[in-house]
Image (cartoon, rainbow, N blue to C red; front, side, top):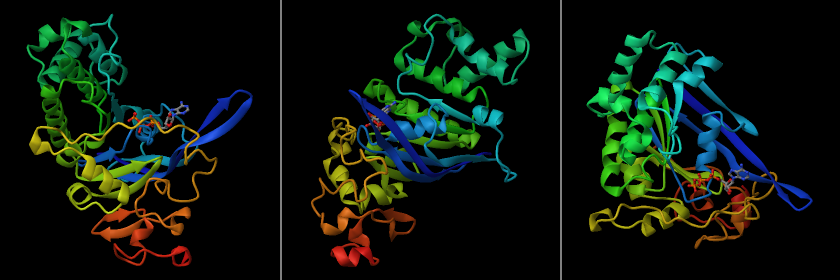
Length: 335
Ligand SMILES: Nc1ncnc2c1ncn2[C@@H]1O[C@H](COP(=O)(O)OP(=O)(O)OP(=O)(O)O)[C@@H](O)[C@H]1O
C-alpha cells in the first residue's frame, strides 16, 4: 500500500494588478503524511489553501517548494506513472467532473483500459459493473448505460468515487466530496468512502468545512488558516480540546450537531491576496494575530509547532514553554 508524504509544501501565486505583479503565498510550509487505512481531515475556512494543497498532490498545480513523495510497501518511491494510478481525486462537484455526453460505462471503462486493469469488451463490462456494485449503484448494468443527467447528485458522486477506484487508487484526496449534495444523502456517501477505505486500506485526505464529519470520519485533523497548518492532532483531541485560538474559535462557532445542525464552519469571505499572508515569503508572524483575542507582541514572530498533547501540536506562542496559558512576552518568545 502507498504512503504519501507531504513535506514543507509551498505555493505562491502571481497576482497581477494593472501593471504591477506581486506574489501571494497560498500554502506556506505544509507537512503531513497519509498512511494506508487512515483518514486525515484538512479543515479551515474558505481561502485557507486546502484545495491548493489537494491540487498539488493531484499534480494539477506545481508546488513552488517542498516535495510530495509516494512510497510503496517495499519502501521504494512510487514512479511517476504509477503515482497517477495510485493517487486519485474526488472533487466537490460531481456534475462538473463527469462529461454529460458520455455514459457511466464510458467514464469507468476509460481508466480501466488506460491503466491496464481490464481488457476486451466483456472483461471491461464486468469490471465496470463490479465497480458500480462496490459503490452501491445497482442494478449495475442499468446504471452503466445512463448519462450523468439521468442520475441524482448522490449517484453521480458515487460514480466519481468508482472512477477514482478504477485505476487502483491507494491514496484518495476527497475535496469537499459531499458539500454540494443534499444534506440527507451526505452521510451515505461519507459512509461509503469509509467502507471503501477499510476494504482497500486506502490512505484518505478528507477536505471539509464540516467539523462534525471531520471528527467522525477521520483519525487526525489538520486545521489550516491562511496557508498554514495551525493545529494538528488526533481528531477527538483537536475538536474537544482545541489548543490554537483559531481552532477554539471554530469549535465554539460550530453549531451543535445535537441541535440538528452539522457543525459546519462559517464560510468566510475569501482571504484576498492583499491579506496578511500576501507576502512573497509568507507572513513573518502568526497569520491569525489580527483576529486573535490572545495576541501579544510575540505574535509578530512565527511560532513553531508546540507539543500540546500526545501527537497534538499547535502553532501558537501561548504554548511556548511546554504548556497552555504560559504566554511569553516579546523577548521570551524569541528564545
Ligand atoms: N490560480 C490561482 N491564482 C491566484 N490565486 C489563487 C489561485 N488559486 C487559489 N488562489 C488563492 O489561494 C488561496 C487559497 O485558495 P484555496 O482554493 O486553496 O482555498 P480553500 O481553503 O480550498 O477554499 P475553499 O474552501 O473555498 O475551496 C485563496 O486566497 C485563493 O484566492
